[in-house]
Length: 74
Image (cartoon, rainbow, N blue to C red; front, side, top):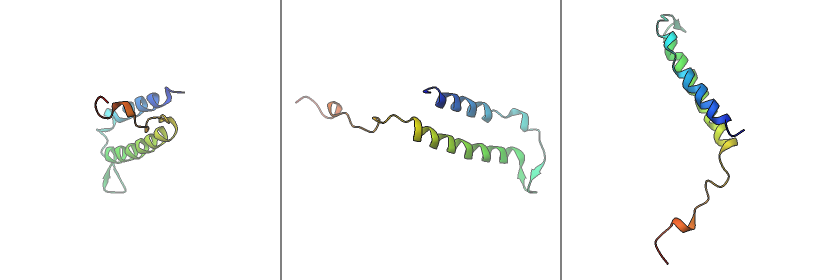
């Protein structure tokens, strides 16, 4: 279960490498180049993936301050 965020990250990296689309010349909605629309959608999916990763996989004790690291010797 701890490898799920890494798998998601790797899939998003692979999806970002969209070399097969740069030769597409069609426009979406008459004004939006297809590769730009793809990257806009990928950005929304990536933001959603990060929200899910932080919500479900962020360690519970990551926000707790460590008292021993504050200041010098006592």
